[in-house]
Length: 99
Image (cartoon, rainbow, N blue to C red; front, side, top):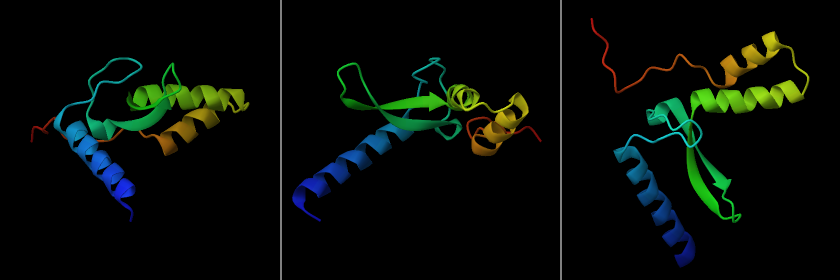
């Protein structure tokens, strides 16, 4: 591994540790959400520079659902595919169960 690649890898690890220390805010709906209930994406900004963006599962499902509508799938097939790809029944590790 060359020096540049090693430096870039170190920057990625540093960024990931920063992400874990705070609860990310969805870039679409601005909801604070547990990291396990969303996805980090690399998207271009208005100047076509790549930047990290967090999106909650609800916004990802809406985005994916719009894509599936454009493909002509029925609402039942869209819901089934969304539930398979992005299930909403993930546990939230920040909320303890009362038992």
